[in-house]
Picture 1 (spheres, one colour):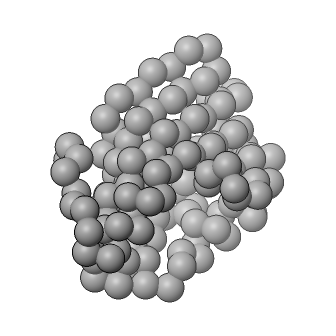
Picture 2: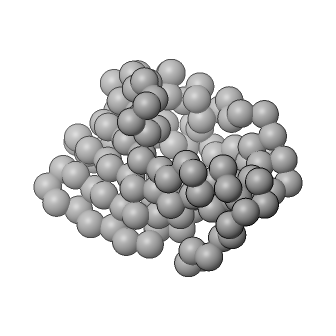
Length: 130
């Protein structure tokens, strides 16, 4: 469900509905985007991150390609699309979610940033499933 909220029909001004995403998470959620990023800890910090996209960025939808759940862990391979100042980029992502009491307690995303950079320069294309 969290991935669905990033699709265009749920977004407002290109941003996901932070309040609805927050309802799916624990108060002490740990959210991390990539191995170089510092984790954001706590629902208010994470929510603020969802509300404050980088300037010029809008969600253009996410596609979950594969997903598996084992115990309290859900992993998905997905394509995250963003409109960056008028250029739509497609980023392959591996997401890992730890669930506690039916809510997301940990959310870690690992993305292939070089493909995004190439697309922003007009090199490469979005050839991923939609």
